[in-house]
Every structure is written in C-alpha cells, then in structure tokens.
Length: 98
Length: 189
Picture (cartoon, rainbow over the protein chains, first blue to last red):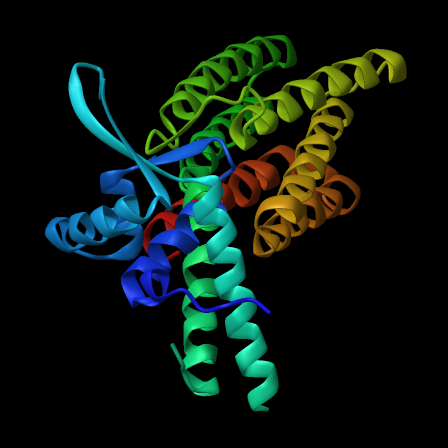
C-alpha cells in the first residue's frame, strides 16, 4: 500500500511537486515562473526547494540565459515516483474514510 | 504519519488546483496575444475586402498574412520562456507544426477546389482556421471551444444570410470579437 511522504506533504512542497510533475519529463521551470504560479515569496520558495533538493526529489539547475543568471527546477524520477505514491495514499485515505 | 480524510481531500484538491493552473499557465499563457494580433489582421483585411478593389484587397491580405506569420513566430518564440525542455517534441512545437500543416492543407484544398470568388476563398480559410481553433481547444483548454464555435457560426451566418455585407460582418464580429476576447483573456482569465 502506498505511504504518505512527510517531506512532500507540507502544503507548499506539495504544490511545488504538483506543478513540477505536470511538466513533461524532460522539462524544467524557472524560479520566477514557479514563484508566480505558487504565489509565494522568494525566501519561502527557496527554503522549500532546498528541502526537496536534499531529499533528491528535485533538481536545481543554475545557468545563464542571455547573460543573466537563471535557476531552473525539475522533478527527478524519484520525486515523480514518491509524489505519485503520496497521491495514491491520499486517495486511499479519502476512499477508506467515506 | 496519519491524516484525516478531510485533510486528504484538501490536499488532493490543492494538487488538482495547482496542476490545472500550471497546465493553463504554460499552454495558454500567450494565447491572448495571438487573438489580438489576428483579430486586428482580420479587422483590417476584411474591411479592405469590403471597400477596396478585389486585386488590391487580395494583395493587402497576402501582406497582412505574412506580417501576421512573422509576428506569430516572434510571439511563439517568446512564449513560455519560463519553461525549457531538451525534447524537440514539446507542446509548443507541436502546436506550431499543427498550424503550419493546417495552412498547407488549406492552400492545397483551395487549389483543388479552385475557388475563384473572394467570399468563397475567405470562407474556405475561415473554415480551416475555426477547425484548427476547435481542435487545439479540445486538446488544451476545452472552454476555448465555445469562442471558436461562435466564430464558425457567425461566419456561416454571414456567408449564407448576409452575403452583401459578409466582409464587414467578419471584420467587426470576427476580427473585433477576437480582439475583445484577447483582451478579456489577458485581464480576466
């Protein structure tokens, strides 16, 4: 049976993962786009991204685009897998609770 | 870790909401720009067709379409710069390829049918455009199907019921409608 994941379950981290797994598997989103999607502050998003990166659920890629520094974020295969399991666990709790 | 069914439901709703927002933001974030651009092109082009001699209006249409193509490519290039992918078959590229192929099909269909009359030619192009619009909407954002169907209905109505003012009908209701819809999507969506 799928298990809930404590790292992912926190509200903002859950929304970060939901946004990232919606992208195609080889796609990555830049920091400011993700921030405006989630409607959070730079500091708040940065802190949660670090937690997800430490867990190995996301990749943070810093590069230069048009000579400007940009940070791109994507979900790792492991991140996609645990997110899927987390959603299955949530659905199971909901189903059994009704 | 244990949570209640209510908390699970809230978490699932939150996930669904952000997934929907992400899909919409990425796939439809720049749609309004295309609507406004092509709305102005239809407005100017159909007004030309109504009031200018046929040959001159036809040449102006070609110029407007080339300008529209260049600006569309520019808008498309600048779209979704917040998302990048190493895959050559991303959604944006597939959409661009779809419209290019539809354009080629439209040209081929016009050549095969041999449409000589200006209104017939315009209607042929409108049918292909509205077909492409509805097909894309069904894949990306179902709510966009309705404006596409409205445009199709307006065109058919104008062509068969109001042939004397067909061009001006399409300029104001078709072109003007696309411009208004574009601004509506930009400000309210």
